[in-house]
Length: 129
Image (cartoon, rainbow, N blue to C red; front, side, top):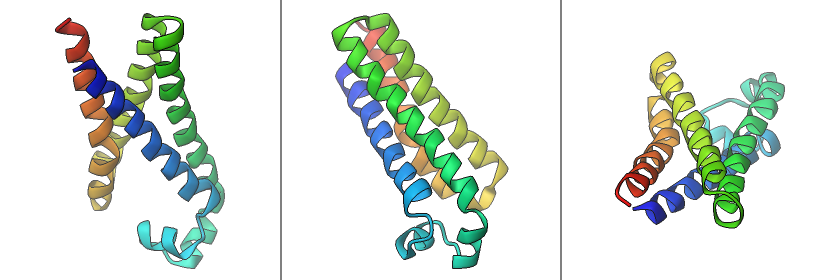
């Protein structure tokens, strides 16, 4: 169970690295415009906000990846704390998006499902040992 949770946490981190890339690097590219259902004008108007938001996603991903490394190299408690905080923050952000923006619920579900599963499996892996 724990390994499944670890793999899911890393997958959530990699998804957020991809989101970082779209928001902070390729925000005005055609593929990103299609993904976020935006016009070029909307992208231009929100470019600074997206750049900043992308880095939040990158920092969450780094937190989880660093947690996995620390878990296996230095401290189980510190590593788990980082992984739980990172995935929990991702899940909280997805829940907020789901509640506050009904038109973005499909994106919120995509953003939040992997962190939720990671939390469940990491917890089961700890409890069932």
